[in-house]
Amino acid sequence: MSDQRNNSIFKASPKDIFEQLQNGETIMPNDPQFGRLQQETYKTMGLLTQLNNSSDPVEIKDFLNKILDKELEAVTVFPPIYINYGKGVVVGKNVFINFDCTFLSLGGITIDDDVLIGPKVSLITENHPLDPKYRKGLVGKSIHIKRNAWIGANATILPGVVIGENAVVAAGAVVSKNVPDNSIVGGIPAKIIKTI
Image (tube, rainbow, N blue to C red; front, top):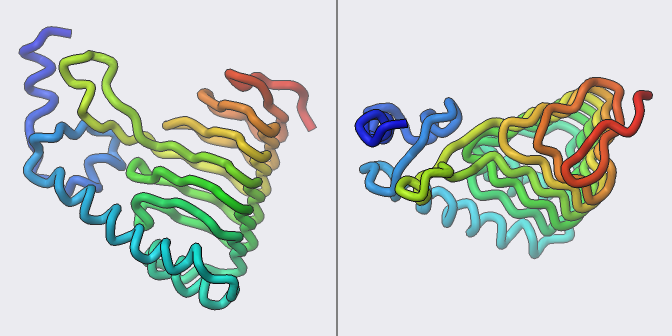
């Protein structure tokens, strides 16, 4: 891709920076809104500090509602949890999130009903351009975990991935491609092991 084309891609946009990231656009550090990313992250970190120091399920849910800016139904979270942009996360009903999970959510994360997320799971929606000239830019690609999926301990789900309904991601897997419904994947990179 020519430098001229790259330069036109990375010009500042009048659209909201969070909307741009959730639309998969590349944001460069010279974008006039770039500082908002850090402001939102630090604001979220303040609430997470309180959430992560609580053992009261009602208080944990209240902090999570504030972080996500939504009222959650029948969601259980075992702290600590780490989220950089709560408004980028949508969580359905009857979801369980185990200890020590990380959600980098500027690209958007959707977790449907009845999902189980094991300990130390990382959901990463953010990436950087491969071209070294633009490496400090930020690109968002959403993650969608469909109904009744189970993400095993220490699995990593990378930007742009959809985990299918009833699918299982084995512990320690690194998932870089979509996972079909009713399938089990494992390994690095994750591959289909079998269907269920």
